[in-house]
Amino acid sequence: MSNLKIDECSLRGRERKFLMKLENRKYEERAVANLRTDLASHKRVLAVSPTGSGKTVIAALLIGAEKRWRKVLWLAHR
Image (tube, rainbow, N blue to C red; front, top):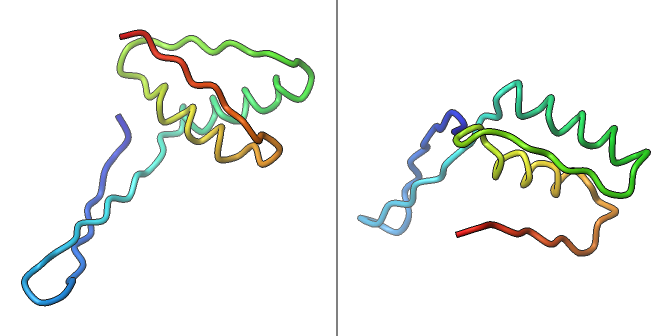
């Protein structure tokens, strides 16, 4: 799981809204960089990572970084 920081912002009197800021871990950033490099030379790439290693974060970062992608299929087993 990524390091999480919570900032508190005032919103209309008593109501408060909490904004979460995620700090990516170095291995997550390396994974995204490696996947982007592999995707430059291959049409399909499979990434495998153990439970709790930030696969969702890595996928979200990769999808956000690839501006050329119009559609993304994200599958998860229940």
